[in-house]
Structures are given as C-alpha cells and as structure tokens.
Length: 417
Image (cartoon, rainbow, N blue to C red; front, side, top):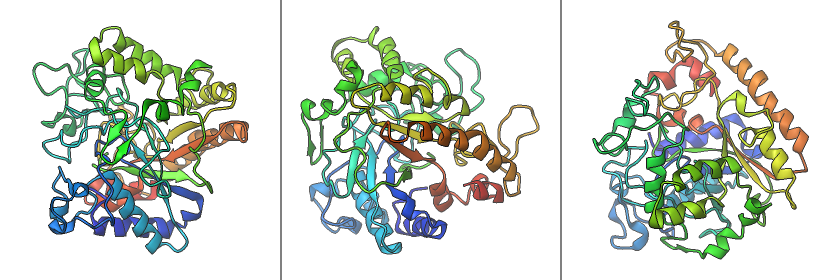
C-alpha cells in the first residue's frame, strides 16, 4: 500500500497521535530504499489532483497517481502532504523530512510503480546535502539505502541455489535478474555488482527537477571524512532534535562501503568507473538489521563506526537505520528479520506471521538483546559524535496500508509494531 492517499495518510496520522510519540520526533524519513523521484515541488500538496493544473512542470506524474486521487506523485509533494497532515492532525507537531535519494535519479524507469525490488534502469540520485528545495521542510537529501546493496534475491541465487527468502515482487517485470542476459540478484543487503554499475550509468548526482547543485557544494559536506517495502513510498521515524542535525556537519563515510565499491570499480569502464570512483567519498546510512551489527570493532558494527567517527576532527555525523523489529517487514519476504513473535516449526528460524498472540517474547528479545544494546552504545558516545537514528522502516506504515495482509493484520504483528 501507499501512504500518499489521503485515507492512508489520515490513518497514519491517527497512529502517530495515539502513540503519543510526536514530542520525541524530529520528523520522518521518506522514500527509504525507494525509487520515487524528487520531482518539482508544487505551491500546495494537492495542486495537481484530478488534472487541476495540466502542463505545470510540478505536475509531471510518471506513475499516474494524481488521476487516482493520490496527491503524492513525487517526493517533494509527498513531503508537503506529510507535513500538512501531521501538523493539522497533531497539535504542536511540525515535522521535518529527510528524503532518500540513493536510487531515485530516474523518474520513469518502472512499467508499474508498485514494483520496488532491484529496479532495472534506475539511477543514483542527488548526493547527500542540506541544500534542499525548502530548508524549513526538508532537512536533507541523504543516501539511506546504500546504492549497490540488493533489495532481495532472485528465485535462484548467484551460486545456483534456491533463495530461501525469495519474494515474488523480486520477480517483477521491472526487477533485475528476470531477463536471460542478467545475473541473478543476491539476498537483501548483499552487494549486487550488476545493479551498482547500472545505477552509476544512470546517475543524476547533482541535478534533479528544481534542484541544481555543484559537486563542490555536495562533496564539501563529506569529503573530509574519507581523507581522515513493501511500499512504493516507505517512511520511518527520526529521533527528535530542535534543529537540523545534518546542517554544518561533515558526513561519515564508511570504509566498508568504499571496499564494496572497489570490487565493482576494478571491472568497470568509462563513465561508470568515473562515477563509482566519485561515490567512494559519499556518505550513506548504516543499517543495524541484525543484533550482530551492534557491538564490535570493525566498520561493519555500530560500535566500530562510532569509534572511527569520534576519532575524526571534528567528529563526523553518523546515520543509522534501526531495523530489527519482531515480524519485521510483514508485507515482504526479502527483508524479513531475525526476531519473530513466533517461529515456524520447520527449523528454518523464520517467522510464523499467522501465529496469534501479543508477541511478548519477541518484544522482550527485541528490547533486551537489541534496543538495550543500542542504547548502551549511544550512551558511550553521547556528546562525542553527532548521530541520526532512523527508526524501523516497514513498521507503522504497514499498519496503515497493509492490514488486509494477514501477516500485517494479525494481533502479534500489530502488538510488536
């Protein structure tokens, strides 16, 4: 489902209001791991509805959403819609937005905009920056989903084995790995060389509709750091702060990402190779999608990353995606997590999404073995490193858009989310 429709948005506002969490939030992250283009911001969020202003550049609508009474036909107008709905529905709450531009450089690459997995023809979007089209509304464009990491596996894995987490959405007509001349996609989060080269070939790093940046404007934010869903529009909560946490900061570039890119650079040619080499110096968020990624000394752990960021002068801003909720991503198989409300009895260790209950055991595991560990690490680096947390994509929005799916609507999943 999509939160852009007014009824879905109304339901989501009610969820946030009923949870009484708005005072703890800075705002929302949108397009997380998505492909929807920024587009041009309209004067109002519903400016283009029902063909109201045909021909206006902000009404470009490759997905045909406005004719279906969905005003959120690009990410900029979705941000307007989200701000208006939340501020009108929750007294005193005026949320700010960060938009994932990691893979939304191309606006019309999909035959069906509901498709979300390893999209063919996509391109990397704007480099991370705070130079947004509306600084009062949008804190930053940022790479939240790391370009080059797979959305999910093909039915057959690169090693020829059958993928245990295959999601039929990753077999869509728009998904890489479905054509005979394409390699199969690896599991979610694993490096996908074929994808990153296509993303680089179609990259729009410094120019989008109504947004034009120079390399110096964007690289200056993070170059020093190197030298020293499922929904078509996904969102998640961002920890509260009184000012833009990205403003004036050097962004942390994870050396592990540079290592992954180097593998693809070695076999790339021409402009693709040049673009990949530029991307080595670009910051992206780090996903804490397993408990094993919290503690440790390497740059593939939260603890190791913060230690490295703290050693910079000045310490650099690190963005983490907190992503290990019980019954995680109930509407998809590709990104299901390691913590379950109840487990299947086949010994696979995977979740039984149809099991009823209150998810008490899953929530306790999540709290004691995951969240408490994250809090402990955060306390160690409090005041030493600037940190942004994006909290649990694929969680609360699923309750507004996908309750008809029994995996999302059962009592255990609802309790966990």
